[in-house]
Image (cartoon, rainbow, N blue to C red; front, side):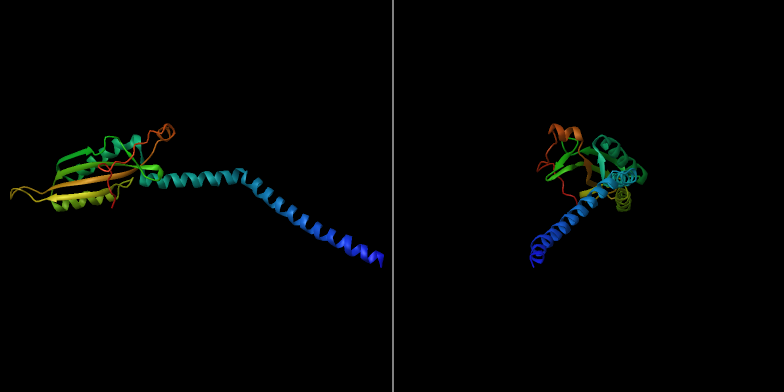
Length: 187
């Protein structure tokens, strides 16, 4: 009887404690195996591939700040391909880009373009902008009726693009804020 009582009071709690420790050991081994696998070359290569894919997708929608001049020149080339007349482009903001509130890594850059051309040329111009990489958004546009019968209508568009804020600007805290007058809504 004493032996049975000792077994009940000593051995059964020890088995429960042993099972609990075994379960904890199994969880620790699983975490160890996962972390060991994450350190493998194959996993690193897969993660690098995924990061590169995400950067590639981002580059479809956001330009680098140093690429803005080339981007605006490519918009000018599009206007030339379409065949509009009196094409002009000018930056809207004093800064080359401005930040988007609550968006740490992405900002916007805006420019105003104006030209003379028929409605079909305006449509072709917008169509080519829609296919541009990075994506060029049209925030606003107006078409003015031709003043003389033989002349063509004038168009004015406000274009915006997303830009990646340079790491140096983020680190230095010199990211230009969007102003009420310079901010352009994106449609």
